[in-house]
Image (cartoon, rainbow, N blue to C red; front, top):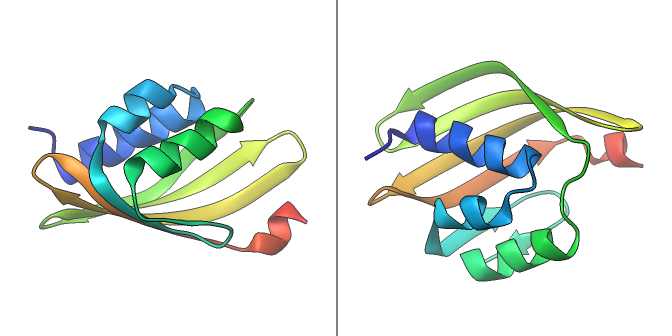
Length: 111
């Protein structure tokens, strides 16, 4: 079973590669996602939105990270053409899957 930090990095790798099936496999069915632009209460709903508008030309550089208990926090520099934003994501893990993602960033970076 992967550690919370390993799961977080697997998620970020799948996200930046737009590998939605791999990303979905890392998520608990009852995933809770909270971010500045969206809220989801199921992994299928979250993955469906990403499949409709997959991340393209995205790079994610890890700036800092930590793991404690069943959670991992990763501070990243997110880049895609015309956008650069520092982001923090808290990944909470349950039974080997990501059960909750809390995403924080300055939405003005996307204006």
